[in-house]
Image (tube, one colour):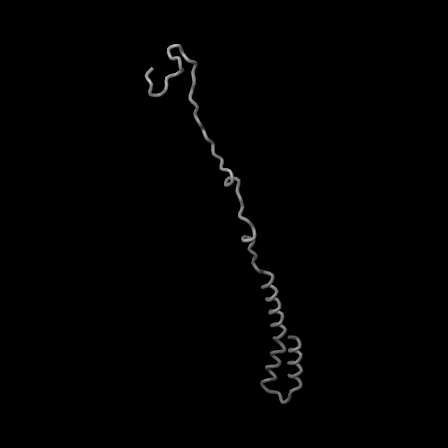
Length: 98
């Protein structure tokens, strides 16, 4: 773009008779550096500011609660007593008469 600016400056000075294109070449020589700098900066930001999503590359997290659930189980055992003399086999079973 700077080569185009130099060409515009030379053409503006060297081409005679001066007319509307002199103003056009002068405006191009003035605004081309601005356009070159802005386009260079926008191009760098677009490449640098890309969003990266690491989600698909990583396995899903495994929480300890999902691998081994913590369940407390309470089981009742029958209460045993010493056999008394009236019942030789121990305490009466449910549904039996004493």
